[in-house]
Length: 499
Image 1 (cartoon, rainbow, N blue to C red):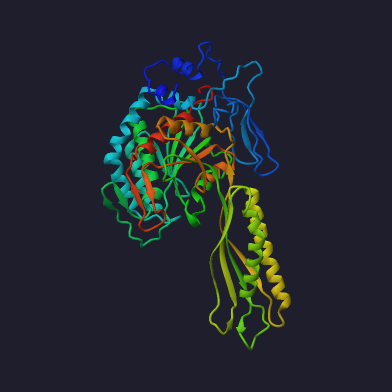
Image 2 (spheres, helix red, strand yellow; image 1 turned 30 degrees about the vertical axis):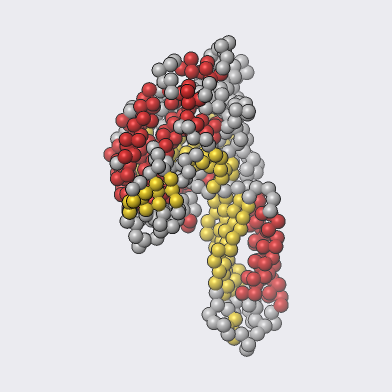
């Protein structure tokens, strides 16, 4: 039976629903474990080798062709909390992919909330979108927007709202207990500096302003979810924590999300980031990046009179030439990896040996090992070029190199059978949208790299020209974003003894 046909029969009993899903009249209800999670601690010897836990709860697979037998729940690297294996006498509780989402959608109060989402989008959400967009929020300077956002959350009710030391807005909606805590996050900041005209212009269902899609709209999607849950009395097993995170963009370097996961007792079991312009796109792989400013310094001098003095520009050119030759083969096969020299400068005049030469570079890969390879090649290439330039100089002081870290984002990916991915796909299909798995650099990088189940989903509506002054958000079925987030957050917050 087609999933949408099943989940819309909200009045039918849950047992009938499960029987229909499994497609067997002979199926009998599985024996579910009655105890809570038994926790144990393990150590990981090397970064990236995150172990998988045993089947301690009802988790589903990301593909109908992959058995759903694992619960990939873990915590901070080197101090990972895993569910202990189920007792030997217990019966397997694996269910088909998407079961948790289907059961969530079949709940009358959830069905009513999904139906109401378009009404909230008509005016209530738009008013808040405009208000938030017109408040400046450069990376790490989001205080004014954070204050306004916190007040919007307080007005909804049912939330414990606070702003932490990093500037994150946190609003906790308490669950019944016994279920995992889900962090539902959207970043507060934009790439635009103070002084940018943020006035929102409207043209039919098009809204134009810097940052309106990325990520004011993401923040508003969270507001809609919070209000739907409050107005319809939707209960969850685990807590839902709504978060407006600080410093996601550029120099912010994921500061807000890093702060939330800085300690081993952060308390978040699943993460759903809302930050994407395409509703059907699920980011399951985190693209990591290393960014540097490299400064080569020397004594400088007259281009003729001081000839023979080590020239920083010569060293820089030679170093980058070496790096490009060595790094290009790394990018031509396997997992996508990239490098880009974005800016460079130095020197004071055409007849002057410069006293400094600098460049800024961006290295990226979804594979941590490949990113490390590019990083190593860059450092080696610059070091060798400076050494060679110094060796060739006949006068003056030698060149020195200064490295400034402009930001590092960790890479990683969800396991192929990650339940959070399966449920995100099932939720989209319930909304009659075919999912597409993707890779990107978002707030979800931090939890994914730590082995914590996390995805990034779309905001609702359509976004164009991100990071441009003419950025626009189009109110094309905008309710799909909150509907997706609502279904996924509720499904992922269910207790281990629930599907």
